[in-house]
Image (tube, rainbow, N blue to C red; front, side, top):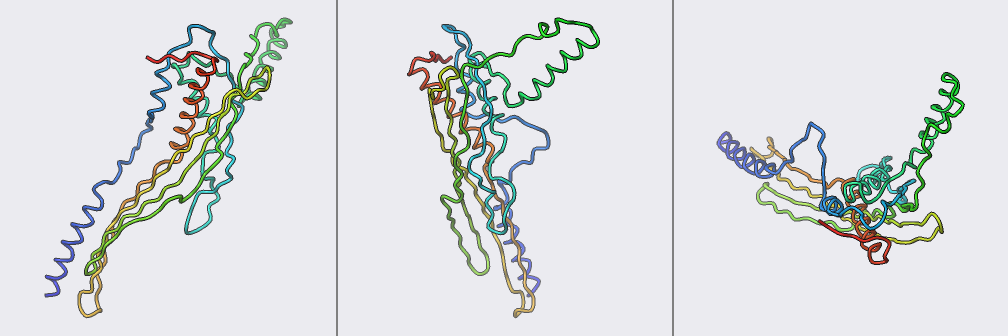
Length: 267
């Protein structure tokens, strides 16, 4: 009788845990590139034809939230959002019209760039005897516009909940949680210092968790049988920050077209 009961419990457990684990994500071993809907919209912009390409600079795009990774069990030392969001801003600017709308000049690593140019000049003067070494290198490009802003908000657990049911030691449950990240971007004129355009975007970060378990006493509380299985899916925070940056840039493009700074045309 005990063996028959154990077999029944095992069959139910295998059925429930199998259903709970059918949607497990595929683990990618090789690097892969992800693109969002906003990325495709940036690429769909036509190159500038009525005016020269716009020189633009990005010095930094910092995390202004100071938030740590949320955890209900212990304190985290890692930051909740990326500390290198300026790389995504530069990439988004280069995505506009496939790099034929904005010409991004290097400013994040300006110190390294200046050091390398100084090294070239001193080496040529010392070993080549070139007194005109300063004229060999072309002058650095000036930017007419600067992108300022940053990640200004990260709100953890803005919404959470779940459902569950249990019957004779057999249970299933599902939980969800929503965080939010907010990005602010502005375009500043180098000549006047005026803030020409500003945009803000908020992106939700969804997390889901589902699972099932079986708990059963086999004989008068002397033997117990328990099985648990589940899967969790968390939207990457980096993806949310990147899409929010791209949406801000799309808004900047629309506002600039409205204010007459440029003309936007799509394929």
